Amino acid sequence: MRASEVVRAVGAARSIAASLGLAADDVTVLHDSNKLTLRLLPCDVVARVAPVAHQVARFEVDLAQRLVESGCPVAVPDPRVEPRVHERDGFVVTLWTFYEPGPSHEVSPADYADALKRLHAGLSRLDVPAPHFTDRVEQAQRLVANRDRTPELAHADRELLGDTLRSLRRVVGERGGAEQLLHGEPHPGNVLATAHGLLFIDFETCCRGPVAFDLAHAPEEVGERYPGVEQDVLRVCRVLVLAMITTWRWDRDDRLPNGRRLGAEWLGRIRTALDLDDFDARGWS
Image (cartoon, rainbow, N blue to C red; front, top):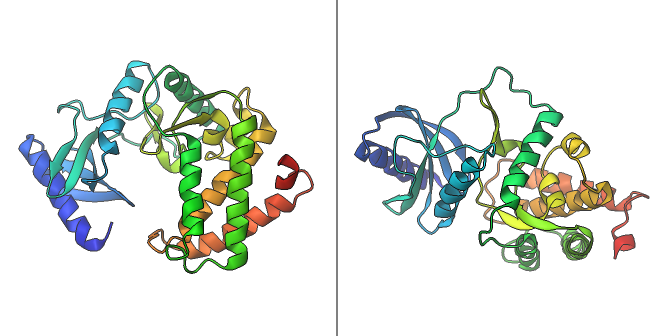
């Protein structure tokens, strides 16, 4: 969020907490991106704050409750208040349980794979409306094609990203296998290592697609330990996801620290992956 928005967002979260009888004298920013994640003390609650147009908040709360009922490893809304979306001063706010970190911050690939497998099992039983993974790829394709939004992207790099997104999107669609509801971005930043085990958070990018698309966001060692996944397809998904996140880094509005440097580095990784003898995107076409 912009600095001017952060002040208002924090004020909205504190005001809502106070109206619910939760003391929020101190605020710590846990994460700042398109939405703000705050720890409020002394009530010790996590507040997720987003612009009012960010209507996925209701979906996240409802989905988390349904997954908890299925025994899935997910963070839950704070049980002291009604699980709902609050609105104030142009922001939507949801309140979540704060989890103390576990004894070790190291997450073993085997535990990560097991937790993700259990999450996928719960997601597979849910029938809720969600976009297809190809919708997210199309968003990246539109961004690549929009020179006003990506003015610093060189012509050759623009062609590389556009060709990679187009060809690998089709490959995954044709060869990815069975599709189901997915987390959307189960990368390490969306996994909490707690005293209760690993818990997944942030379901705003929830979508439908093959499990390999989700696994492409996790470390490679996790995919190696996840049963039943075709490794060739997973490798294609990893390059597709890399092309997507590289595209976001060239958006003129991207605020990720060192985003341009990462974007340039990842372009090199995409070229390396496509040039390897055992992975040629044209060979999959």
